[in-house]
Length: 366
Image (cartoon, rainbow, N blue to C red; front, side, top):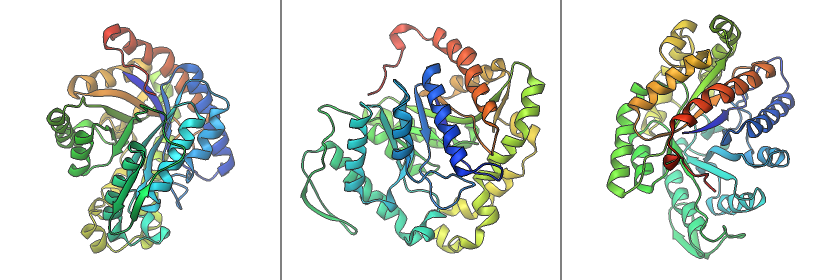
């Protein structure tokens, strides 16, 4: 079992965006000191309450100067808004600068990004699929060509080239069946979105596991959950209520506050973005706090409480290889984020490391 920290860099009133960045850097440095395997942030544009992180490379470059072993991970590079050959070059260069400590995911991105970025929402899926083929070819092959609807590339190459034999740990994330099938087919890791209990994605994860078996890959499932800990359960619940409400509101903030800036419902549904027109996120944002905890939407309590949650997940989720906690959602005070990182590293991580036979320990991925 591996352990990581994931942040959306949500920006709420009461903190400047500079403060959000500075605190996140401190949290990444602390995670490195405590032995977490990776620190991940989202790549997100235009809507600060959801996440103010348009350039993960710049953020991780600052973190790299103050850390020694932790991996850096972007979840995800949103391909419809990048030239894929250029992005592949940037990935290879950044990986070189951080001594092979870079990991990344690839995705289509949230539906609300398209209008702001000037990309027709109907084009996001075909742009994503074409860009994915180009980016993987650019990283895998010394020379590559492509003749598609959006890009025509003749006998190209990227510089710098990835180090010989370099195999990136690549992640896909989302809720569509096709994403889970593609991840299993290519041997990519699958990231389960925050706020969803296991049963909500059991069928898609079964698709992923079946595709892994068919193509000779081992499942590699990463589970993300917002988390807050204290040695006293009541204290943890009291401290976390505002931040967990903020996390859910932040995830739905664009739909709640900027719905008039989204593409029309009919266009969203026709483009495979029906989830954003379904009202699910708005309903989730109004969930009572105790229900969030009871229904496993967030983890709040003592280290022992969270150990029980993870043990339960491990029993039912074949292929679970990593748990990633979000400790800074919803405008939370910095000290609370640090406290949860410390308690999780002191009690939860050692519990699972002790249960794992040395022969089954996952090697560090470089």
